[in-house]
Length: 106
Image (tube, rainbow, N blue to C red; front, side, top):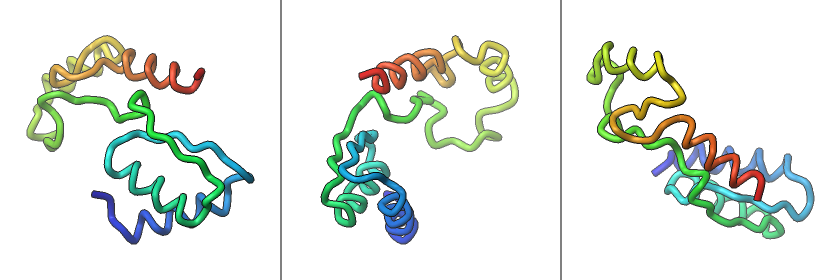
């Protein structure tokens, strides 16, 4: 879970910055859902909806590991082919960009 104090603070700033009747789309992952709920508590006019296409990049076997635990060679291989290499067997950056683009277009 996200830090509760930081989430409340971010929601307060976001609530003040949004126009009237905003439509809010967010990742269904816990941290994002927490922020959306905090925002709705402050701005009932903000209609919020999760969209799986907005979830963060999947780093496969690298998930949750420190960069130094992964090692230089695998990271160099990823950066050499940044958009087409799937780090840790996870998701290619190109795939992430395509799904987020589809969500933004919708």
